Image (cartoon, rainbow, N blue to C red; front, side):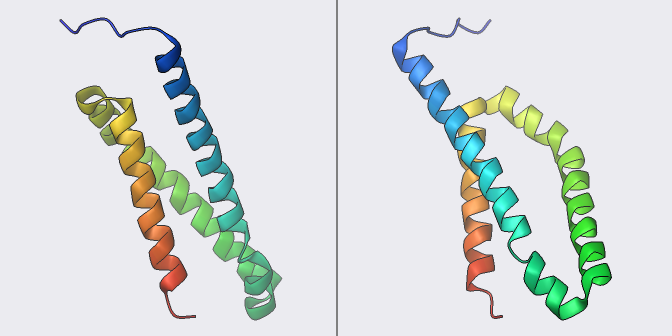
Length: 103
């Protein structure tokens, strides 16, 4: 069987850092997803822009539903911290690619 997890100040600090990172990730995702809304509205009109933003939000939710079991298996196999770090690195890479994309 697996050895019991150590408990102590370092573990609590690591957990708090992961929670803070997850909070900042969610906050950043919300800001990033809403940032283009005014530009989309001015270019596409309110109805079309809102339809596009709703489609993107639904796609994001569907992706999460599909990937959750896979990520859960990865967490079981490799542990929570490596999976969180990897997913955050993927978000940084995709955000950098989005920022570098021609406008």
